[in-house]
Amino acid sequence: MSADAIPCTRGGGMSTDAVLTLEGLSVHYGARRRRRRVLHDVNLSIAPGETVGVIGETGSGKSTLARTVLGLVRASGGSIVVDGEEVAGYGPRQWRALRRRGVVQYVFQDPLRSLDPDLTVADSLAEPLLVQGVPRAEAATRVRAFLDRVRLTEDLLDRLPGELSGGQRQRVAVARALVTEPRLVILDEPVSALDSANRVQVLQILKELRDDGVALVFISHDLGSVAGVADRIAVLYRGELVETGAARDVIAAPQHPYTRLLVRSAPTLHSAPADRAERDALRALLHA
Amino acid sequence: MSTVSTLAESTVAQAVLSVRDLRISDQANGREIVHGVSFDLAPGRTVGIVGESGSGKTLTCRAALGILPVHFEVTGGAIELDGRDITGLAPAEWTAQRGSTISAVFQDPASYLNPSLRVGAQVAEVIRVKKRAGRRAARRQTIELLRAVHLRDPELVYGQYAYELSGGMLQRVLIAAAIAAGPRVLIADEATTALDVTVQAEILDLLADLRDRTGLALVLVSHDLAVVAQLCDEVLVLRQGEVVEQGPTREVLHHPRHEYTRLLIAEHEQYGLDRFLAPEEDV
Image (cartoon, each protein chain N blue to C red):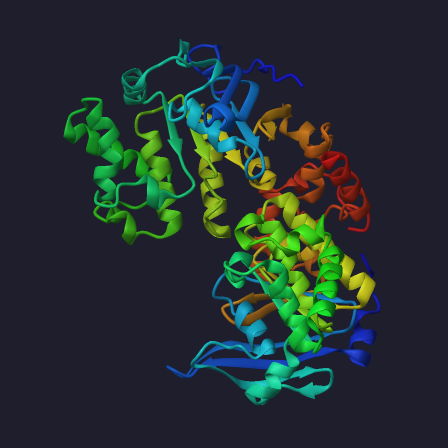
């Protein structure tokens, strides 16, 4: 199924060119006989200010997708264009230079592992700016401006990550991704480890980011948490994008059997509980 | 899905599990943690308990299983299993009840299996002890059970180790162990929480299937109201040890009275799939 970019200029980005374009992207792990295909022919384009949800189950390749776009995993084929720059063949030094510019940022599931445990919140948040050569005083001012956006108070600035709640930590991780004013933020399961109240808060923050024109790639196994935020949804199944479309269409009229099973499996409150027989039929179809 | 209209009459008549104003206290500091939980559960029915961590939902289940953590004690109310108050049972009597009348599955199935024993042997052990079956009969019954929980190729799974199976398969193995001795009540405490959404639906479908086929009564515990809404006739919403809302599932979903329930529902309506899917007719 195709994964064409929907022309989208909402959010007032500087250009209408995609902030991220993947073409024919494949990734393999292991060598020779152990070589295993993890991603196959992935085509996806993210317009400025657009939020795309990437949905997939455990082992579908969704985290590999994020890590490939960040240069943490090497693509074995295809093209990755970040902000107009072909980066698929980049070496470590070029990746570092690209990351330092802060155009693309990322947030992972577990903030305890992505935040330096020995840095205070203030230092963690200022670091990406200091790396760019922003003077310390100016960095501190900009950090304060972003605290408010993620609903954190200034009294947390002197704390270490271990002294924060899970929800606060994840909001620090989001703030840290924002301080360089990126055009694209990749979020890998940003709310999966959070309880209900914190999840709602982080989702609300993501919605505001989207409205501010930051493009988001929101990776999750949970269609439910993505549904409220994403403009488009891309469904990754066994390393391939099997369906891409407007969030409303993918959920209300899923085409691929896996997407149909996904929608019929998601617990909902008010819709009639999907027929068990229907799910059984879809499972049989997928495992055939 | 069964209707809720006859719930009141049927449960009063033939409840297999009756919890009456259950109170649980932490004896270390004398504080009451669960402040009066009551519900009736009839065979073939499902009651759901919703609440965040620390709300007392797991303590309530553990009291019904006689496995409260140290210091915690039932300080008021009664739990009747098959018409018999079980709150004052001696340890040996509990051992006789558990598995045979009331059983449970929990989150993180891998931690309930011995990693160095084949999973089949661990299910068979339950049958050998509880049903006094011989080695060969226990093996045969285990394979039947593994088939009943929809594991493909049960003979193969019998000989596998926990690390060789996925989370969903492990939870099926544990459900097989939990129902091996033919209990009348099964408690599923966050049993699908760590699983992928499609696997979660598989496990919930399996529980519903067991309930409908065997008349097993289910207590479904989850932090997610929508999970509970899938197959429960009645819902209890717990917060800080207090039942803040209780009633037939439809009633609670469509006419929530407590602010906290409304918050749980609003979260789904705002961020879940409900916005995109056609609502039920009988709203």
